[in-house]
Length: 398
Image (cartoon, rainbow, N blue to C red; front, side, top):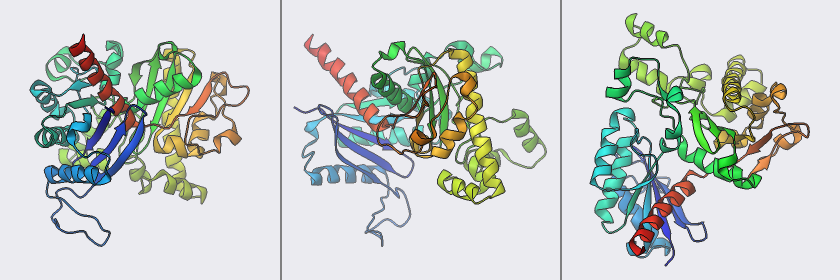
């Protein structure tokens, strides 16, 4: 029997899916169901798309599409369904097979990720209902960072805030970082446990991680995905006194502040656009706001690189990944410019490439490799789900 693993990323209004044959790591079917819960539920619109009343209808449609493809005629063919779950709190250090206790623990983490965890859990619950005989595996974005030491994850607040309320740095993009770290180590021909990396996941959301001997020891995002680097619509690091000022002066309510920091800050706040391709086009044309945004964006990244170099000492590679990291050559160049005294020197011609696989960008005299490593979070989820199932099967047979 082939180890077919379905990966689902259930969001508030969409469900992304990919069906893998893990024996050969091949994608059999992939797609996305959007417009879940929109009022105009009914037949296809002018773009040939349907909208669905709820996640149950949407996931039933995924089932229909999988059967229609001929790659999954019966749910018994599934080895597992792997689910992306954004926040696992301090409980989940690795992927787990879902049971009632896991569901309650994911629900308990709702306050830590109120926009992401509820639809993530809803996808799990619907799949348990529609595919009751198929093992469900939860894979957590935060798990990769639970190797951070207390001096990296604690905030300088009274202990009760951590002990009673779970207020600490958790970090995100862990599934992406796990994938690219393994891929980079394999590319270098080294055991992951021997590698030190600084990895930059630069997309609409963005974060940096310091990886020591294959494990996360610090990361830029915090208790929530708002902290750290400047992002598409999120502010990144900001003086908390600014937030108190905005509330106490009556400029913003707490609801206004939530919208401002999450949806209307970052590149969008600076330029009015959050697509880096558009911002680079504007900057090249001399737009002052766009030029400032690019400078601020790269400056923030460079500060984290410097800080993580101080923590790690020598690194084996600086890794760029995700949409901007993989495809925005001007950003990579500006981030690396000036880091030559730290042993990081980029080659302009190599940097001009737009590869579909791991590629080196460093100049001949660079002491540190600079890598583009295309991320594949869905494949990492599938691998982790299969590994959990393999361990269970081995336990049954042992």
